[in-house]
Amino acid sequence: MTKILGKKELESWLGSIMKERTLVAPKHVNHLTLFSPVQSVDEIAFDYENTNLSPKELFFPRTDTLFTVERKDSDVEVTPAIIEQETIIFGIRPCDAWGIATLDGPYLDDPADSLWAQHRDKTTMIGLACTKPAPQCFCTSMGSAPNDSSKVDIMLTEVDDSYAVETVTEKGERLLRGVELKESDVKPSVPSCGTDVPAEGIVEAAQKVFDEPYWSRLADRCIHCNVCAYVCPTCYCFDIRDRRDRGKIERIRTWESCQSKGFTRIAGGYDPRADKGTRLRQRFCHKLLYFPQQFGPLGCVGCGRCVAACPVNIDIREIISDLQGLGAKVGQGSN
Image 1 (cartoon, rainbow, N blue to C red):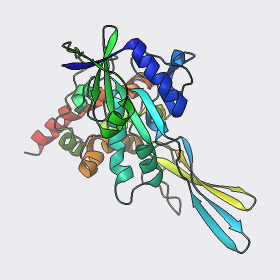
Image 2: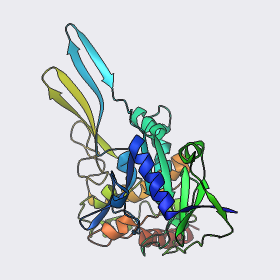
Image 3: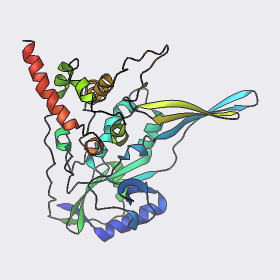
């Protein structure tokens, strides 16, 4: 039997959450749909394919203070940032939950990033299964699915005028405590994803094509606006800066991109990725080659945001197909 929660009961439950905790949910802002703190159920967007930006910034803010250093008389006091507020995210899609879980690899690898670990501990994720994936989505090719519940705490799937409820973790059980769920024999349907991408064997293919001129030709189109990194749920490059204010210093972490000119420049001025081709190659090889070699999963979850946002139509789905084809040719040539 399937556990069911009516839409009115869902709204009542979300309203009760808002009274005690911070609730973040998809919200229509002008022509965009973005994750934002909400004060009323009326602010929540339910009619969306996916948000324009991923919820990554709820765990990895665009600008974040890591710690402060302050002079106290003859001493120096270092105060690390502490996350105290508990946050509930409602409406996270399976691909974005996979994105957060993917970033657990680098951020929880020893030594763990303190702020990431605190955000993960203080956050409960209520997933909302996709009923109509966007044309650019390809999550099933990346190992997930429109109704994948494996990376959230609670998964909701819309069924007529109700939601099927799957409790996944202890966090989810605690959040649902006291909520009356009905039972039904209804089985939620699973929509098909927009695109089938040949991702199997992509690590080997990318390795074979690493030194090919393909990357330079592709980079001729790229204007390095970095919008792909900005919308991506798994890009995590950052820069570190110090902000001084009288006797106090803040260590600040800000988003960056491996495609930025000078991102890899080192002392003496040498830049191992001085041209656009090597920087573009770094982006895609990190997702399709280095990341799976180091942490296991691919560094792409198939959300399709970069496909929709790129002003020059560079499409990671086409790149994966190109690499598979080129890799096969290179492999034949070496035999």
